[in-house]
Length: 341
Image 1 (cartoon, rainbow, N blue to C red):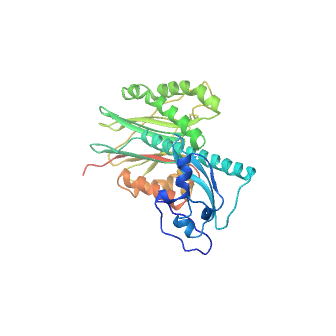
Image 2 (image 1 turned 180 degrees about the vertical axis):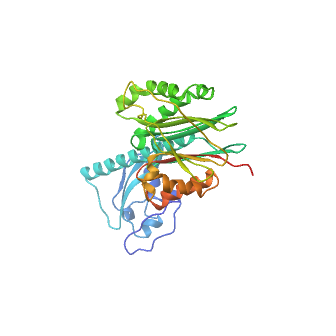
Image 3 (image 1 turned 90 degrees about the horizontal axis):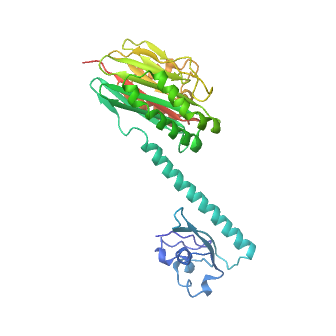
């Protein structure tokens, strides 16, 4: 059913079956169609929309990215009319532009689906441990990425932030994700995270140099039995632990992001997550949503303290993006070691 616009002052008809419209004929013909006076054209004189007042119609068919005819770009008037050659060419040019927009929209929709499919599909729980993450791009897609998984008695998790936003950053982010995932077996086996991060950096160096970009990255592995946490911070600096007694600790290092210096190296750091401790790792987009982005660990630490499980914490972060329009991607990973009741 296709709604049609009628002439000025005419009573608009109800929705019409597609076969009773001008546009249906345009799509069927696969080429632009001009009807100078529909009342004088036997093909259209009896259509409800013509009886309702439409006299002039000009339309050009639109194709999707697969070449399927999906609609028209069209003009109506309640007076007879015509298009000269230049005007008809303008209509066809506008239709071509509309087709490009349709294709771009379809491709972007697919890009959103693909990027979402590359993220963990569900929260992770194991005994007293609970892990969850969220990625909220400022645009349709973005350059933030996060990951987590469990192998044996070790959980690996991480978050990366590619410089920039949008499709370009998303493409680089996909490559970063693949490079990091290639090291997970070594990480959970106990290989130094500084070594694996340096390996990732060497593999990404050429791509990042050509794209004139860099990646802030935080990667970690935690032993589920004793809470021993190994991590590397490559220019991220946005990870905090709220201890069971309420103390807030920032986890960071002096290492630069990947891609800044071609021959840089990274260093593994260590700490321990005790029973009742909560860790939040996030991208800098979250700083734009808190009242004090300078002493950010205080408001964000309070936010962590107020939520007893990762999912409700991440829901609260998502609500912040609704209350304050984000200018950057907002991504976070929460790791809770819940106290035994």
